[in-house]
Image (cartoon, rainbow, N blue to C red; front, side, top):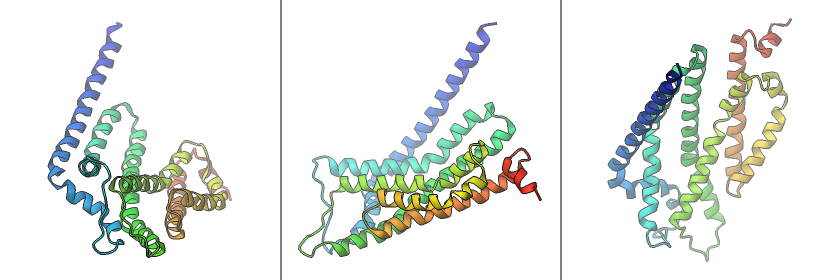
Length: 252
């Protein structure tokens, strides 16, 4: 009688190991396929900065092995992003059998939506924020100074900005989860809208470069995504008869 729980636990561990190995193998396979283009991938990442540098100016590498490892890190990041759908599928296939039907209906869109929003935040940062922020900084640079950024510092800056914007674009998910978990109501979130707007600009001033353009380009999406989260959370609450928001809507 005591062996059944142990056998179940061991079988879960075996399945977890199997799915982890599949995810790691998918990541490594994509990484190996991308390695021949690692330099081109880094050049693509650096193109927003290079577009603002004076003609003939290049980035520098102060470390001996930096020209090898920095493009490798960037390639690994791209490989992980490409492997992410398969990795998430493996995680979902492991967790889904233990969830109730209503939990699966809620969890799967949540996982997919949060992943897409994070990638959308990174894309917004790369295509819009970087080009405007770097141009703004270049205009204020003294004419006697020739900018030659270090590739490792540039990668560190880019990664921090990607994380900042990726997390920022998760605001709708945070709103929906809080409402779904019963931590707060949609009505209450609407009441604190003014504080969220102020907080968005404070966050934008902290995590972005010291220019107003970058701050606005982070704060405005936070506000818009917050409103999107409120709309989706309100729709979910109306479909749930036990929700406090649903009860409020039903009152005359």
